[in-house]
Image (cartoon, rainbow, N blue to C red; front, side):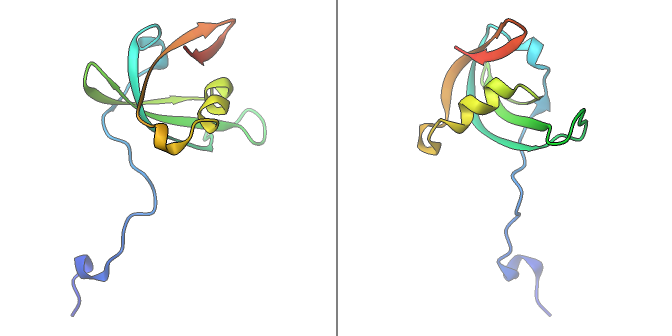
Amino acid sequence: MNDFKDLGIKPVTTCFNGKKIDIEDILNKQIVVCEYKIEDSKFQKKSGDKCLHLQIKIDDVERVVFTSGTMLMATLKMIDENKFPFKTTIIKQNKRFEFS
């Protein structure tokens, strides 16, 4: 009988490490963005709403941030994968979250 470990199957989804942290708790603080993924939101107000899952490090501790910040999502899509991880600060500008 085969052992599962010998089947060569790898997980399909990316799991992020660390406890969830509210985006408000990291505003105006330097963080390291390690990776991200964008999925359909579980709390859709309208069809097509997305949720950003952000793997970060703050003070060398891994944390996960969930947000519907469309500006953050659009900015991350413009960054080449080989530029990760990178240092940044998230600010709130006119009720929108932005990298600075």
